[in-house]
Length: 113
Image (cartoon, rainbow, N blue to C red; front, side, top):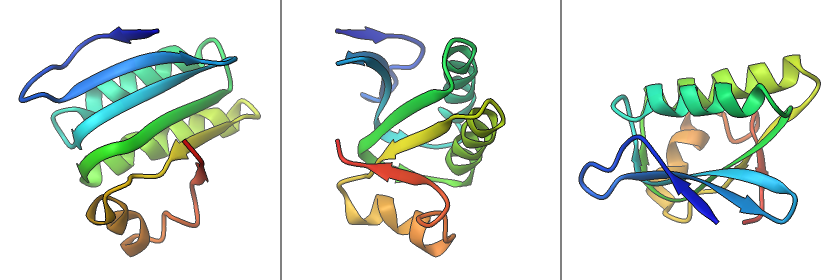
C-alpha cells in the first residue's frame, strides 16, 4: 500500500509504503533542494512514531547536497532516539557516486531492497 503526498513535478514522486512490519519512505527520480524540505518533514513525522526508518533510494537518478543533508538530519534524529535510518542503495551508479565521494557510504546503513 502506498500513500502519495507532496510533490509530483516532472514525475518525481514520494510515497510511504507499508512493507511487512515497517513503513518505507520511497523516493523516485531526483532528490534535490526542491524535494529535500518535504523529505525532512516526512522523516520528522515518521520519527515521531518510530526510531527505525527505511528510505528506498533505489530509483533515484540524482542526489545533491540538500538531499544528503536531509538524510543526515534523519540519521541523527533516529540515532538520538536509539534507532537507525536505513537506506536502500540507489541502483544507478551515478546516484550512488555522491555517497562514495563524500564518504557517506561508510556513514549510512545500507540495506537490501
